[in-house]
Image: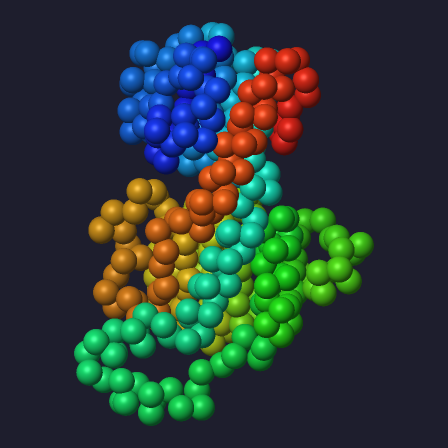
Length: 322
């Protein structure tokens, strides 16, 4: 089989270490930044494995005339023209559920880091201001058990986040296009409208895919409905947030801060508007690493190999989205 990995994270070394049987196939690994290489040297690709931040548009699909499968390495597949792939008879799959625990851990990390002001506290110790900051923090820092966590979306990652937050005594509410009434008791969550969630929550945590409806959903109107002591948490996609609106909300003290594993556009460059020194102390940032733990990567490659063998054997593929 002609198999191509179009990815910023996968390497040949990692592939063959985790899936030794791939050596029996014609495998190419091409970086997202090298689209011309992809178009020129991978036109015979039959199975395309795509970085969750990658793009498989009409041009690419038309160019790969032997293409039978587009498979996201991760959960997201917003860069795939699913409608056109379906029209061309190409199967599209993702890795649903592969990183739910890992990303939920990062969401919890960001929440606790915001509450405990972990970055400014860390720096204060190095600056010799430990006692000064300790005195200023006396009786001020909240515990998660005092907080309401609002989840926007209620898929695998949101559900895992709800479990972690419940374990620490937080109240958890959610909003979603579809209400999962049958799951509310199991996950100890309450359903409410978007406006009510924004009004009540100490933390607003994003857990939705990027669509035309959700792109830049976190705009000035959204942020104005949040409490001024609330934090925005985003472990989903940077495209959900309007960067200018978030910067202005932070500068104007409309919200207390934000914990972000993702920022748009990616790669995040030093001139990104959110890396403004004026809001440095109000942001907790991780470099889009929430979903790439060692266990997650092992699951990713296991699932990829399973679907490769299923395709070769003519069996139904797992996590098909079209």
